[in-house]
Length: 258
Image: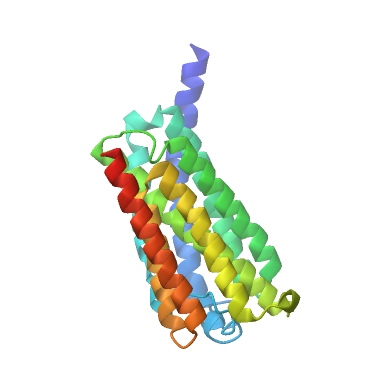
């Protein structure tokens, strides 16, 4: 009798802590844009100090954060339902999401104060936490009802997709600030390599899970990279190539499933 009671108690605590963590992250992120510590926010850093990071998408692409937070708020409401508070899977996902939110707050602070390598560590914590939540939910592997799909699976797919892209950009930014010589390869060449590697990672998810939301986030990012680097043929062509490969793979995988 104690185990179910303990699970129920833990579920209630997590159900309350999760929306608090989501709203705290949203508030901190908003504040960092309005009143950044050094007077320059993340977007301004990308357009000035880090303007030479060629894999950074065009500015409009970052509007996806609005969709991410809408999805997280939807999940916060979903997991608060009494039926979900006793769900062991949701409890584990809540725990990982809270870790991701704390790491997200840390990342925003570290990046805005230009501590780029420590920010990479925070980003990896976010990525790792979201991967665990994604796997716990069984996204792309389990058939679920409409509510769970729209209020849990899709929000985590979008969030993980964007953080996967952001991790690559974050590492590239840290290397750029460190004035890494690229082992003899040009910045254009390394950007092409990074896009190819990111595409291979996304392709693995597509082939294993046929996750539409996750794939569309990569396509969204690649379109923005191609637009920003329209004057660099090797980069925009690689980005477009990644879009085509992911789109064809997703369509083929979905058709095979059906």
